[in-house]
Each structure stands twice: as structure tokens, then as C-alpha cells.
Amino acid sequence: MVRPLAGSFCMAAILSLATAIGANAQAPTAQIDRVLFVPLGGLEQWISIRGEDRSNPVLLVVHGGPGEAQWPAADIFKLWEKAFTVVQWDQRGTGHTYGHYGEKTPDVTLDRISKDGVELVAYLCRELHKKKVIVLGHSWGSLVAVHMVQLRPELFAAYVGTGQVSSWAANVNTQFDLHLAKARREGDKAQIKKLEAIGRPDPTNTKQYFSLGPLISIMAPSDQGWIKHLRTQFPELKAREPEQARNLEDGMMFTAERVLPDQVATDLPKTACDIHTAFFVIDGQDDHVAPTSAAVDYFNCVKAPKKDLVLIPNAGHFAWMTVPDKFLEALVSKVRPVAIARARF
Image (cartoon, rainbow, N blue to C red; front, side, top):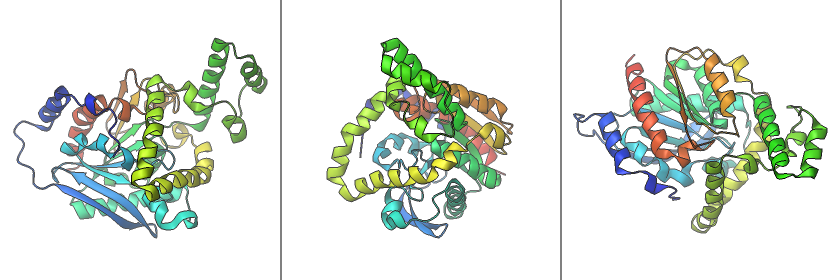
């Protein structure tokens, strides 16, 4: 498995985690480590369930991308497993699940993937003897997870968004401004001329959007470093697990094309301001992919029984991967106790 930033899990973070869980906690009831396919929406879909104590809250990770399965970076979640039973899920059209069905995978849409997610949560509640779970959505996954909570709020002890999506229009306009500012800063006359000719981008014109420039060039430095790290690690993954690496690559291309219309239509401040569970956003302060300012605007519109916003300095869209100690600290200190309390009823 990829082992990025393992050194950042310092002793202080481990001690903080132990304190937050409780010095007088009982001995673990049982560990769990399972990898299996479960039927969701008529398809067998891959999940991993790992944790050190089954009495801990269940935390379902809903990956972004679209199609960016998180199992290649599973070591990031290792310390999480002290406080949570962590569930990874390769969504319809993604990774191991894509490997089962390939291009014959049907109905790759936001609606169907969200319904698959709800089926998965119901399965986890039954199998792990829980009343509710925590759902954590990253980027595209935050859109899926919000829809899941809207469909069956009673199944969720808490929602956590990171790389939190707000609206496609906000993404396009913020990224356009960043590309133009960069071009002017660097004196790139050809790029300035191209962007100024656009004037103000049409969010529905995806061809125009993808012509603005490489997204990585306007990402936060930490995000640029993370993307470069993934690229350097991928040859090792291909050598070790060639079939699954191919499924990961092909699934990302397959899924991204099919869910693009759903992404373009996204406007959560108009469609998802009433959230009937605890609502948390843990974002990098410098996210330029799903702009932090738009995520804050969305957070402010949300009405929920409990809500909290954490902005992590010197981090961007991949805060959970680039500053994992700070991200875990927020999960343990803020989300975990609220989720435990809410899961009792």
C-alpha cells in the first residue's frame, strides 16, 4: 500500500487520540478486517471494513474523483481505525467494482450511486449492529453523501464533508479567476488573451471549462505535492497489482464521463440546505478545486440539528491526505462524540 506522510502521525497525535477516546475505555470487544463484495442496486460492489474495536462508531468513506477509489492510500486510515470502524467502498463504475462489470456497468448516475450508498449503510447497520453510521464524503463523494443523507437521514449519526462541493458554477468561476490571475502574474500573454476573450465562463459549457488550463497549476502547494506523489507511486501499484491498477484507471475515465452532467447540475445551496443530522465540514483553507469560500457559503446556508466548520491552514482539496493528523484530530474531537450521542436514538 502507498504510505504517504506516515511520519506526520507523531506521538502527540496518538496521545491526543487516546485521550479523546477515553483513558478509562473498556478493552476492545473485537477487531474487524473484512474485504468483500455486497449486492447494492443489483450489482456486486466492493467494500473493506477495518477497525480495532467493533464498539466504535462506523465511518463510511465515500470517495471522490469521480472514480478515485481510496484503497491505494489505505494506510492513511490506519490510525483512524483506533477510533472508528472504517468502511471503504468502490462505487458503481469504480476500482474493484468496475473490474467486475467493466463498460457494461449500468446506470452510473448520482441518483443511482447515492441509492447504492443508502443500501450499503442499511447493510452496515444490520451486519455491524449499529443504529446509525457516520458518512464522510470527499469532493464528488461529498455530493453523493449529501444525497444519501437526504434520502434516509435516520440512518446517519453525522455527515462530514471535505473538499466540500457547493456548486459547479462556483467551481468554474473561482478557477477561471485563478487561471487569469496566474497568467497575469506570469506575463503569459497568450493565456491572458484566451481567458479575456472568454470574459466570464459559461458554467454549462464543459468544453470551455476544460480548456481553461491544467487544474493542478492553480491548486494549493500541498495539493500539487499530493498529486505528484500519487503519480510517482502509481508505477509501483501497477507492478504490484496490475489488474486492479488498470481497473482504477479505466474506472475513473468511465465514471467521470457519465456523471459529468450531474456535476454540472450541482447547486447544493439551492437543493440541500435542510440536513436532518449532525453536519460537519472539515476543509483545507486553500481548496481551489472545490473552493473553500463556496464551501463556507454552503455551510452557512445549512440548517441542521448540530453543525460545525473546521478550516485547516496550509491545506487544500486533499487535506485529509496531506495533513492527516490534523484531520483525524477534528474527526475524533468534534465528530466522534456527537455521532456516539446521536447514535443512541
